[in-house]
Image 1 (cartoon, rainbow, N blue to C red):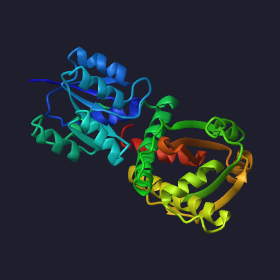
Image 2 (spheres, rainbow, N blue to C red):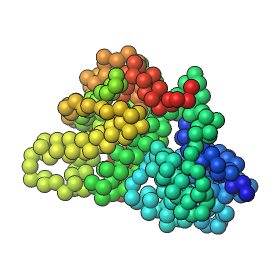
Image 3 (cartoon, rainbow, N blue to C red):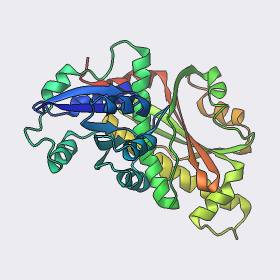
Image 4 (cartoon, rainbow, N blue to C red):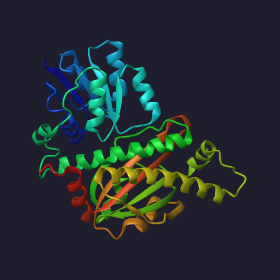
Length: 338
């Protein structure tokens, strides 16, 4: 009997990745949705005996979608597939009725274990045939390439958010990463909307491996230091400068370390890290960015605005890659798709 499978994710790259992991011998009819609103329509049309559901999406996110499924008692078994791997995210979705949670990037073996556990499929786990049928990306499409970079960032963002959430004991709100291909002159303009404060402090972490080099910037609004320090339970008896520096360095080390490790896993590259550099304290954004990336003509800029809503804290991670690294990254993300 054919099983209707719905893959709901705002990323076309992620939807194709998920489809490629479905076992060849599982008799399925696969459908796709770009957000929860579309997914609910598919479920009501009987096209989702099983739904693979992302969390961070526009229009209607995974939490809202699962709430509708629960309230309306819709006939679908939901398996969450997300880059947000915070324990609180797991807890929320399982409480709403999801049967399982799989971290991105999707692992075929893990998927098959869950399918077997719930009696959905227990045959051969090979997905070689489906991999050949489903391309990861549309060749020569800049939109598809940006989507691949965004999904890479989504996984890295989630891994980093999980580590900070564990450290602070708070749920971290994760956005949809903002990805742009820009020139150096456009960099400041591209992230003006991310930082609303006129005064920021920033630290830079450089990394390189297999010909791919990049820079990770952690940006703090000055108003966030005290609240962040309280969550860290740091002693404010030291000087204000020492206190702020400790907060900035500790958060940035954890955030960037987890993020770069997630990039390593996805690209199969071992990155070496440069010593972190304080780019500015209580300065304007123009100064920070000019001192950071003025040597690059073309830039892949990935902006991630983290938030701890319960504490009114916002901090930002900016990943920058020079033009010569972009093709190498894309090749490792999509190989061997075309």
